[in-house]
Image 1 (cartoon, rainbow, N blue to C red):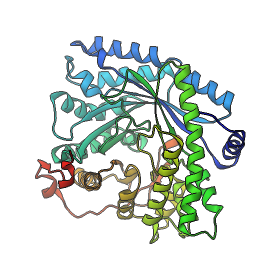
Image 2: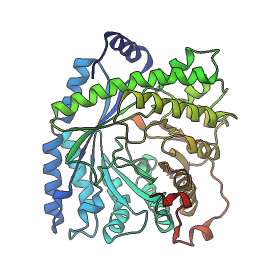
Image 3: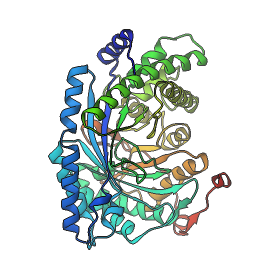
Image 4: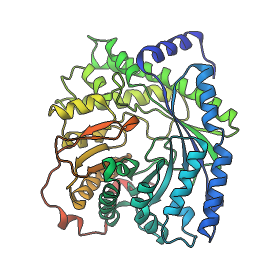
Length: 453
């Protein structure tokens, strides 16, 4: 890939003035050869393999950042879904595996490790059930481990037994991490149509179709895209989309440069570029502010969903022209606690949970980093998960829920997580009873268009 001098200069300006960064370099590692009937032996193999393959990941990222002047914010590891690895062991509680992952993450110096995961969209195995039951304790007893569960796909439908189960698991996780505002729930995401090569936490895991190890890079740059919209203050929407596409192209080119250099230095395979706009709590790094730059007084005003659809599509088109290896989630993220503009919109009443759900129909992921009252019932949380999964299933897209029932807090309170996770206002939820609906169980069948072959 040849980089022109003018591209370098444009990139420097984006970094200096517009908060451009590589949000994450994530090394995916297969742990399929770490299976053992002894949980202790399996955990030892897991620790040894991760520290051997990812031992230089952080140093390599820091060297590239220093040499190229490109900020690399997070260094992460994703591993084979742990339910698959642990299932043959003699462990009844899989927290021991989460603790092994946490030790390996600490030794390598990465920010997070993902893959304490299970795929149950069509049903459970015994290992899936044990892993899911272990999630609350695992996330409460570790610092860097992230967990995900896939409960639906377009081809399989929605596993409503798993949906009900995850509502209870989220409540238990919040209770066990109550002293930190329910922080464990910020490291747990429930998916529909989960991708196997996602570099972003908390949903990252190393899919079973992935190679032995791989480097996936997630790029960001809401500030760059906001600047692109500012450049056409009087332009029509076609011109706005074109300006966004050009910026996304430049951002992606930088991301692929970093990804290929990292994979070369680490002697592993370059996987994908995730083209996502992932905000942070910092000013100038907000997806909500991009939408407001298009002419909305506040994110959540009528027209917000249309603006987000334009943004998501333009980012994907621009990125796809820049690299042949697009993957992960790719698009615009709308996490409330991680986006200063979203936080402001919620606090002033412009943005509700229902409007956020509508917005997830046209963007990446779903209801992300949503704080709700601590007394929200497990059935209500399950209903929110089911609604979001239905959007993903019917529209053949990835959707997810990362929701935090903040213990002891009510609507209008603020829950503090710190760092990249930021802080967020506790949002109002619909309190009408849905327990009879959730209690039916079984599987919502896949839509007719899921029968593609």
